[in-house]
Length: 439
Image (cartoon, rainbow, N blue to C red):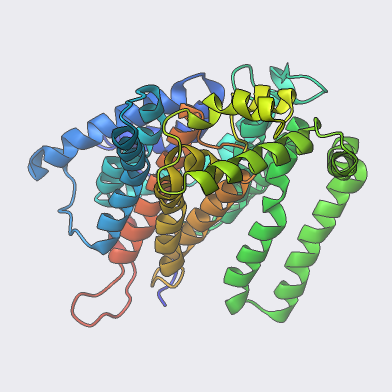
């Protein structure tokens, strides 16, 4: 394997100033400004399309050597909107508002293809972006919080569940970005570790317990990947540190203890007939979803099918009126949301946006260069986080969260695939450092 790529400084010129600014600020802007995540992703996709069709001499981009990873990534981003269109055609009813969110996944395709052709100096501007976003998330909750009820804090425009989940994911990527593109100095290391703590603290303040399930799972993945070349001492101390950190949060935070304790309490009440608790309502909606999938397996009920069936389910006694009311908003499970409205086709489509890029990242974990391997681990972590988030909430019912997920995955995938491709010798296959990143 090659030695880690070193970048002595991050250079900016007129040509790469805009993409560098976008890479550095996109995650933070999404949390700071209402609509910024969607607007920036759309603008970036439009500009990327223009760059893809423009002559290479105008753009300064390297020639694109199309391979199977490009095809797989682009096809996976098109799967959700394709599933929705197929469902609309099959049911003979085009529900236009259901096309908006799925189409946001596809916007990541041109962005990925452009950044795939960009120089490492440009891509390296992602280095501090996740740490900044995690710190921004905590700053919002400390300086300008909004209480959404029951002491759960978030921003003025994003509910605590989505806000806490994004903050947690940013904290994880922050600490994983240590020594990503170069050996970080002490100030940068402090910022990135602070990003992890800020993300955890922000998630705790929002009380979004569904996202906390991701913490042990992500920890296990990181331990598995990173421990292969580490000493026995590291293999013992790292998981012990994580365990102490988690135990400390549980021990010193009444909010965390109460939120976790509520799960047990809700389940006991559910078994005794009180189904209108947060957990009980979710279980009712899952039962209704399974009923729909069994009766309409291939293409579901069509756009807004789950929402429109709530009253009939309440009338039949399958779910309570309170569950029906909340079910008109969402299913509280991303896979069920697609399968109830678009059947198995929809389920496979939503799985594609996790599994395909996740598979690409998994393959890149053994890439020749350290920047590519690290990007692969970060991308895999991000996808696993959102997959787990989607077990208890519809992560993609908001256009902002769709745009955020697709854009971050596209950026990290570009870093991963590009860095790897530039470290392969076309003649011998031997690994070599990325010399054009050292200036």
